[in-house]
Length: 164
Image (cartoon, rainbow, N blue to C red; front, side):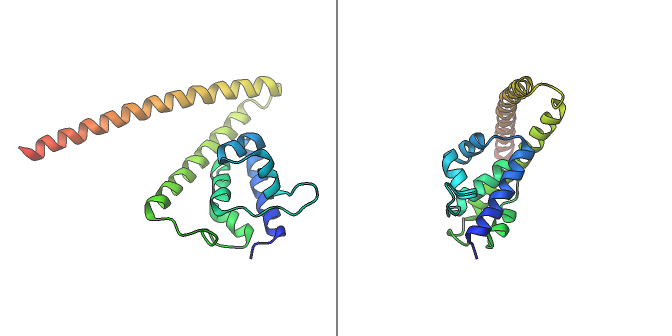
């Protein structure tokens, strides 16, 4: 059963993973589609209040961004994934699992980059990592585009062979 204490525990889990991944609260909140204030309200509470309830989608997005399996976060909350929301259809589940996998990969890359720059002044390290990630994102998009075109050509070639 979800309580203020279980929300604090889930929030602490998210916060630890966020710090390990080198992600700021602001960046995490932005990636999850919520405000930084709401992130703090649901994970630690504001002005001495208990942490606020949030729907499963928000908790899952936070987990994905920091590279945690959503099941771990929901276990901290004392409930099952989807207990609060309708069960996603298989297409949504596949997409959720794919995003979780990608989030975990990105978190590992961020940890590796932080490790490689730990001996630099924080401002220099942050700028180097930002540039590296920007470049990696551009390269990844180009690669996905090229692979997609290759796949489409293969599919078209297969259709032509099937017709003959």
